[in-house]
Length: 101
Image (cartoon, rainbow, N blue to C red; front, side):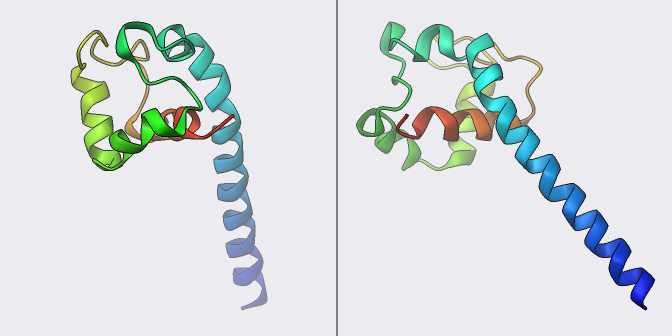
């Protein structure tokens, strides 16, 4: 029983650290993809860190935002310059951009 609890705690710790590492990747992925337009609000892209611009978009829900990224929207190409990103990575990037810097 004690060994099983230690294993469970080990797995939970690993998963928590993996999430922290993924969150730390967001600025690098942002700089390599999303930042090209969102840093300056190019072609109507909501500026990173501008809560007012992101609020109406976030109101649509995260799933709708991810779908927009995957399909492309207005001047944003499908995948938003991060074609290798997973849905979870898109969510992390959207959260990163929508959070006041």
